[in-house]
Length: 351
Image (spheres, rainbow, N blue to C red):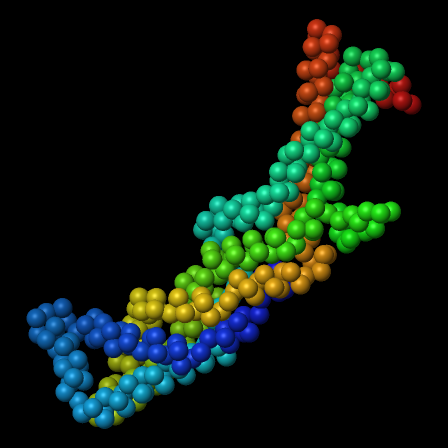
């Protein structure tokens, strides 16, 4: 639902300013480069000394040359950001991002359900008192005119079944506002569309679709990470080749390829600087809330109802079983003994 009805990944990622992203990441590129050099060179005293040479060379460069390299760095990051925006649908699978998090932390779905459906759960729990009382009056009238020791248990099963069935119907039906005389009827959950939209969007924006979680998915999801790796390597190698040639250094192709792979491995350690800006700029909470508020009643009904549908029959049968058990207890209190009904005799009597 998030990917098909509420969110356009292309649209929200277009809200990011590539120049701002480049400004945030620019200081991280020298750190990344130095880290790659330290990994490549031997772990010896002379290897450590060699690793410091690039930094020393850069410090000794003319100011004009430094400015050119820094501009190349900024352009590399800006162009890569634009390329990510152009290809974001192949770099980020929102469905996988959401599902993988739910599977890693199974309490997430329960928390979301509690936040969005708490009032419906409370109603389902408390409705037994009111519906049970009303249906119990009918059961009492039947018992007055039909004296049978097990009428209480059968009646209890019917009352328990009907109570949960009515409660579920009351929550989700009618789907669309329906005028009955002076009253307008609609399912309880559907009347809370704005309230649920606010809870749902807040939970997703602050717990699931955060910048940190989405970038983690981009970098680790088997369905998207190869595309990101290919895109990053292509831009990184182009940038590295431009810088080295400008400094009259001609590294071999396999050296650049190895550097790109090391950069990809180390990238997660250098993108934390983006998260605050990305979370603020994407405005996912507002986007999700507005989209959910604009859903039709039929669309909105599918937000919570499928969760109930999985166990709907179980809930109804559980109500019947509890009602039957309560009837048996009541029978025992009234008659001093508990007798199970003779269903064959009952069927023949009805026939």
